[in-house]
Length: 115
Length: 114
Image 1 (cartoon, helix red, strand yellow):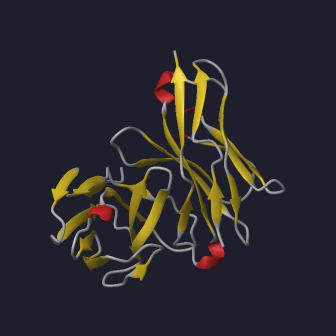
Image 2 (cartoon, rainbow over the protein chains, first blue to last red):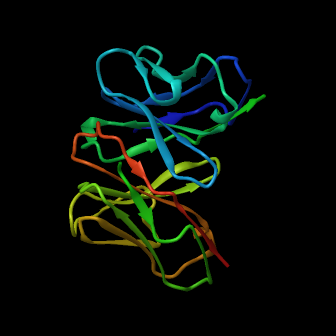
């Protein structure tokens, strides 16, 4: 069965410091992996995805993520955090062998960036 | 720019009422989805539809039904609302099959059942 784990409920980082939001997954085949961000009282916005190819994926707002097959991880990173990055972040996985319709979301990690 | 709209941002209903949540997308997407979002649980799939009049159960369909009469519109129905259906409801859409396509989300409807 597919699953996604975001081991940290909350991540605190100072503005200007690098940030990492962790995600690990379990899926039977080669996964499709996604990161979404949710600002207060808003829907989810797409940040980036890994489908195939280069393991380092670059996305919106300076975020990037690295697909690590051996560690089954897809951690979200940014070299220099901004206060405006404070939001709820969701990692998601899709198994293409299952038709690709069902997306499993992690529980979410709340990121606080202090000025 | 893809736009997914939901009929209400906030709804307050009484136990036992029939509740309709509407979702409209303007990008001619084949697939539409309804999720509920609860703290600590992430998003859980209620139902999805890959074509007009087609629907598939997600992980938590009990107490819900859906309707898709037109390609751009996907409705979620709570036949008899209960307090445990108090939640944030998110609609999403994307194109095609195969799973590589990004989902686009509406702003959400926060439903409170009293």
